[in-house]
Image (cartoon, rainbow, N blue to C red; front, side):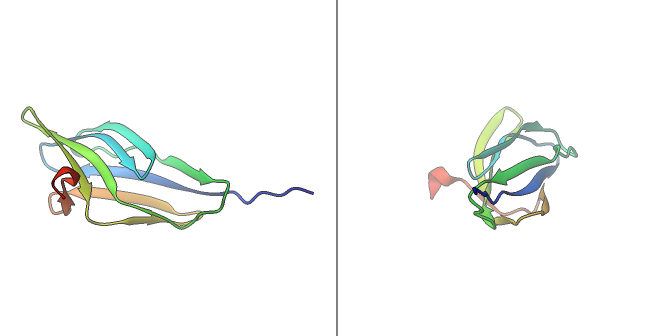
Length: 103
């Protein structure tokens, strides 16, 4: 008899940064959403794993676009998703981020 453990959870992202668009949003190896305007919340994305590697921990990575400038950033906060979780990641004016190219 074969059995597999499959875990799953959902992630959504909310952009609460004033006058800034977020693009190419990812969490670990998972591409979450292409583009979020200020005030927008993404759909819930189902994250599943057949190897039961929950909880999963990753920073959120994205491009911040404003006034013709585009900068690649990563949150300092590591967001954890466990089995059956519904994780909402809110990016706002006080979210601490770093530019991985400058680390």
